[in-house]
Amino acid sequence: MKEFIKNWGIFFLLLALFIILRIFVIAPVSVNGHSMDPTLADGQKLMTYQLSKIDRFDIVTTKEPDDLDKLAVKRVIGLPGDRVQMQDDELLVNGKKLDEPYLTAYKQQFSKDKMQSTYAYNPAFQEIANNAETFTSDFVYEVPEGKYFVLGDNRLISKDSRSFGFVNRSMIEGEVGFRYWPLSEVSLVND
Image (cartoon, rainbow, N blue to C red; front, side):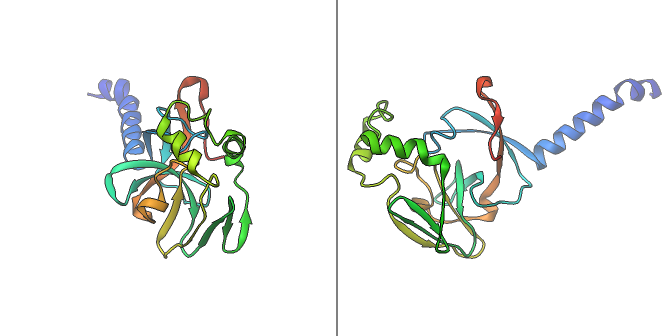
């Protein structure tokens, strides 16, 4: 028995540590759809950290309030108690204008051709973009305590808090930290 523990003890200890980390700390997820384009693409594989403190602009995985079986990847825009406003494609949180540099490429594409070349793969998306006045339509929300306001980066087609409502903290499963697939795009995500 001593020989077995000596030879295999470290292996089983590492295996137990990995299982504990997998259950309580990290979780793999897949991006499903185009709501986070161009930041994250359909089919990419991500690693989330379940114990992270959630801050504004973090990309998180969350259950959708109107379909708790569905896990979505979204960006946190509004924290509990915030007043979140979009006016003429500019984000204001509690009256202060905040930059969203991750939207620059798509906003430029919208200005150029209303996303027609970007959305060439989907005529329904082209129609939505063609009928839009701005990349992100105007809105105002007061975020209740204990809840978060999340948006996809591809604002024209994203199903997010504008349609399914605020997200409870308990619905947020983790902060996206790492993209591990495809291998050519391995990188940190929330840096």
